[in-house]
Image (tube, rainbow, N blue to C red; front, side, top):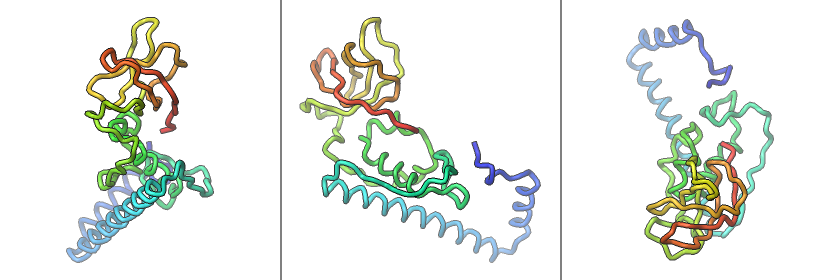
Length: 202
């Protein structure tokens, strides 16, 4: 899906390629420098945003508010440009990504352009970012999976351990890809109770 302003006709694309092909070596080098400069600026932006998230974690902020005017043109699947850029949503998406435990990111965040440079981000190492071998904790963050459970049984969820867990059947009907906080009741039988749930708007 492309933003209408980003669509180019075949002739426009052909003209751009022709211009680049016919340009001199120095012009091509200038174009590459400009491209590298743009990439460097984007990398610097995402590193600054990561520093902001780290600062919020150190100050033990429970929530981070990002305020700005929204004119309705921003789309999450497009790389920010002059015609679709909404910095507040771009920043919010990165902060959301950093706050999420690493083992849940694959399920909760599909490939999208605002997270193009997410590989440069350092992990927050927050209190709720538990590792797979940390089984002594009573509560863990998880995500409800799109898997069929047996009749009369609760939904299956991934909580970052070797095996998936089953949420208590008394819990409300949770749609797939809902983030949940679970209390582990039985580690050997892989049973847990849903304490809190939150649905991402991706």
